[in-house]
Image 1 (cartoon, rainbow, N blue to C red):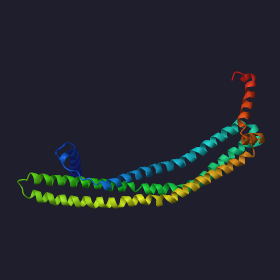
Image 2 (image 1 turned 90 degrees about the vertical axis):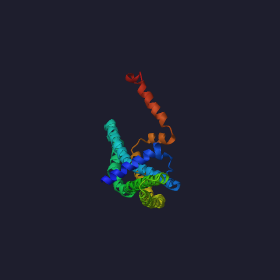
Image 3 (image 1 turned 180 degrees about the horizontal axis):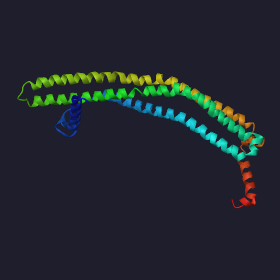
Image 4 (image 1 turned 180 degrees about the vertical axis):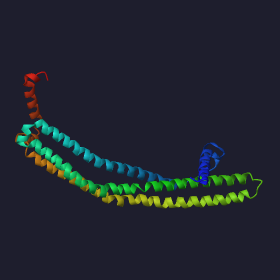
Length: 264
């Protein structure tokens, strides 16, 4: 930061403090209610888009974590069934279905998801730092203007011995006002345009997200449906008729009848 920039920052901080506690606290602060409404709307958009970016990445991570967990479950079930699972093929079939889901479906969705959902949202959010810098600059120009306006008022109320100070302060105040109004008008005009563009920008990514989720769910259902053919026919029927709880209780009762489990 240059020396002049450092001095400006110090002066702005001083102005902010004095407006609250010092002799400037009675000076009317410049307020633009219409602009403030638009900035609040922008902040709402910024917060929502930032959360969307985070959750979009989290969704992809969650899919990977879910299939990784499924694979661990499948390996454990396959080991649990042992030779019985090998003979009827149910545990091995489930393990293979889960492995295919992870190796083929998730990996095939990764690229399209990044291209059509994650990256467009990230590019949209990438504009926020520049916009925030412009807002910060606008607020700094407003502080400069209020400071110079207060200086002019002070010289008018209490003229200085040097008669050139007032005209010079008035010129500086006018320049500060022009710099502030230019930035204020730019933001007041363009912030609503940015907000209005959010829907047409997000629409294609939203559509892609729905299609990707549909594809994942459809392929997962298809692969799990293939495993059903290896399940015991009575088990499938009990599940379809809502009698599976009865079957489970029957097996638990047989376990409790065993002498080694009699205390369960």
